[in-house]
Structure formats: C-alpha cells, structure tokens
Image (cartoon, rainbow, N blue to C red):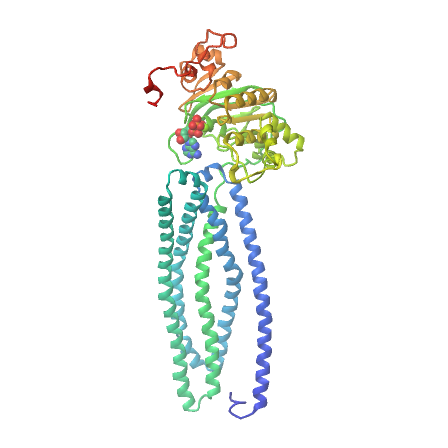
Length: 570
Ligand SMILES: Nc1ncnc2c1ncn2[C@@H]1O[C@H](COP(=O)(O)OP(=O)(O)OP(=O)(O)O)[C@@H](O)[C@H]1O
Ligand SMILES: [Mg+2]
C-alpha cells in the first residue's frame, strides 16, 4: 500500500501480486497434502479403533453381554468411532495450525505496534473465557447425545430382530411410539446443545469485532497525528483478522474436541470393561480328554442378582456316560451346563474335567474340547455347509456330510435345490426350528469333541426324527461324555445317569429304574413333564417291561371323553 499504491509505482504492485500468487500456490499444495494425509491417518485410526473394540467385544464374558444392549454397542462401534475419527483427522491438524497462526500473528502485531496490538489483544482473554465455558457446557451434552442415539438404535435393532412378534401382535403403533419417543429425546438433546452454541458464538463474534473497532479507533487517531501510515493500519487489520480467524477455528474445534472426547470416553468404557472369565496366568492346555466331568459343591449366582441359582450342586459324569439333566423350568439346567465351558465362573466349589479345575485350563483349549448345542441355536448368514463347518472350516465335504447324516439333517439338506450350498438367512431364517436344531447338532458333532452338551436340542423335532437322531447319536456317543437336557422320556431312559435338579439343588441322581423306585420327584416329572408318547404310561408302571408289554398311552386314545366340552366345546 505505502510503497506501491501510494507512490503510484505499478512494478511494486505487480511484484507483490506475483509473490502473493506464489504463496497462494504453495498454500494450495500444502492444503492438498494436509487434507489427503490427515484423512488417510484418520481412516487408519478408525480402522484400528473398530478392530480393537470388536476384538474386545468378542472376548467380553457372558455376564457383560447379559446386560449390554446390542443397539447401544453398535452405536459405539460405528457412530462413536466416527466422532473420534473426525476430530483426529481434521481437528488435530487444525488445532496445530490455528495455534501457530494465533501465536505468529500475535508476535507480528506486537512488533508492528505494541500499543495498538495490546489494545486489540485485550479482547482475546474474553474470547477464551467464553470458549472455556462453552467446552464445559457442551461436553456432557455430546455424551448424552451419543447415549440417546444408542437408545434409538436399540429400539430400531430390537424392532427389526423381532419384526415377526411385532406383526403378530399388531404392535406397530406401540413400536412407532417407542421409536418416536426415543427420536424425540434425541432431538431435544440436540436442541439443548444448539442453544449453547447459539449463545456462545455471537458472544465470540462480538468480542472479535470489538477488537477490530479498537484498532480503527486508536489506529485512526495515530494516522491522523502521523504516527502510522494508512498502509500500516490496513496491514495491521489484516494480521488481526489472521489472529481472530484461528480463534473462531478454535471455537469450532472446542465443539469437535468435546464431541470426540465424549465419544472416546464411551469407547474406552468398552475397551476397559473387565473380562470376568479369562485365562489364569500359567493356565494349562486341555490335552487329550478322557471325559470325567465333576461338579463339586458348586454354588452360583448370576452377576448382579441376589438369588443363588445353584446351591451345592454335586455330581459326576464318568467318561463315556450320557447324563440326562432334568428338572422344572428355571431349575438351573442350562446354568449347570453353562459352567462347564466357563461361560460363567462358579461362585463356590469347582467344576473339573479329568480332575483339572476348568478355571486352570486355557479357555481356548477348554471350549475346543466341548461340543455344544444351545437351547436356541443361532446360525449365521451363509451356506448350510459353512454353518456346519463353523467350528472346523477346513473340514472336508465328506466330513460335513457325515455330521449331517448323524444329525438327521442330510435328507432335508439334499432335498434343497442347492443342497449344502443353500444359503441360510440372518439367524437361520428360511429354515424350520427343527432344521435349525439339526444343523446345530451337526455343527457340534463335526468338531468331534470328547464332551458333548445338548441343551433341549431336539425339542423342535418330531418324535420319529428325535428317535432317529438318538439312534445315530448312540454310535457317536460311544466313548464320549454327553450332557443332555431333554423333555422326552426316551432320552432319560437311555441315559446312563439322570440328575434331577430342583431350585438349584440336585434332588436325585441315578439310573431311570433306580429313580423310579426311589425318587418321588422323578416319578412326578416322568408323569407330569416328560413327553414320551406310549412310553410315559409304560414307565409310570415300572413293573411292566415297556419293551415287552407296550401299554397304550391313554392320552393317545382317540377322543377318550365322550363329553364334547372336553374337546374344547367344539
Ligand atoms: N443370564 C441370566 N442372568 C440372570 N438370571 C438368569 C440368567 N439366566 C438364567 N437366569 C435365572 O436362573 C434360573 C435358572 O435358569 P436356567 O436357564 O438355568 O433354567 P433351566 O432349568 O434351563 O430352564 P428351562 O427348562 O426353562 O430352560 C432362572 O431363575 C433364571 O431366571
Ligand atoms: Mg434351559
């Protein structure tokens, strides 16, 4: 301004412009590199975070998943990681460049005219004070927003997973209302946040404009009295805007930092969550298993519950035995078998395999030694073959088929147009309950474990199929220890040992014939709970040999009551 425009010297103007173009070009190149590399780095950070959290989620104990909600965890793995990523990518670099610009401009201003600079900089502490309170106020709100988003996702996830139930009960209006409530809570949280934003930023602008005003007011006076030139005032004002701009950026970064900080806190909550069931230092590998499984005075309560579920459970399964666990619903049958692969750890007492406390074994080797069919088997999206080979992806087609044959699944699989390559939908949709169960049995058999656990695994198949499965299993179970929770009498009769649970205690332990003679509870279960077609009646009359004298089941006699009311008044 002073050397070119005021002196009417166009060469100086041209030279200055050329220099400016050069600087702008340099800035563009650095801007590109910064944008590119910061994005690459932030994607790398997100990649690592997602993997770390996923890994952690996989290792967290059952007790964690019992209380965690899927929608909320998914929000953390997706949305919270994204908040952190955005700040790490752009935010950190902007923070560094904003601080450099701020300090650099302040130094230049002070050197140009320290009095004027001090006057202009007087507004900066006020701006920082506003920013400080802003950060303190928004950070918890950002945390709350992520929580509300998690709640919204939980409603969504549950609704999608339970779509059939929702339709069956015509509960769409109720579900819409649940979603709207969660959605409204999220919007309300944002509105609260926007209020903080909209009160803080105008204040910041106000103080920065005040700075400019001071420069023109005090600087104008200096120009009039000849202490400064117009060019100097213009340059000074430009530097001042270079000083204020990073302050605005810092304001935006403060919001980003609060948001990323809140999300990072949520991520670390998962990463730092205690893994309750873990390998002890120096844990042993479970080598060749003989298969003696013993419960020694086991007490157990679910984490966070005050009522004990198991109280002094003691029994042993010898190698090769098939143990049927019976008892009323809620008596603790599933809980007992959950303790063998250490899905939970016992409170008191111990569970041993071949004399080793399961807590002294590595989780990996322990669980590899056990084949488990859950009460409510879960299949994964993919082909039937992949599902059966889940525990041994390298199994040959012949091995997969052999397991399917044993589980009585081969026939129905072969009848599908694409056989073993047929695709299973999410959680096994597209298959009947019984088909899912048989695939789950094949999946457990393929691992060829010494210890097999079936939790009510044949409840969804008809009696004839169940008997075929039992017959096929008979060969397979030779030399293996098996635990079977079943509702059918035939299963109990075939077992080498029956353990009856009642309210978390073993109330009977022995063979079918022994228990019929000695245990009132067992007799009660046989007559009132076990499904057994003709066998139930036969078993209820122990003096009759069912194989020789099949006694017809009175329930099977067609229309036993001539009273039409007994047939439901039809
Ligand atoms: N994850 C859990 N957290 C808290 N309590 C639980 C949990 N799972 C089961 N329970 C409780 O423990 C008790 C025993 O449950 P368990 O599942 O072992 O019964 P079960 O004998 O297998 O019943 P069913 O025949 O209905 O399958 C029940 O009272 C149940 O409410
Ligand atoms: Mg159960």
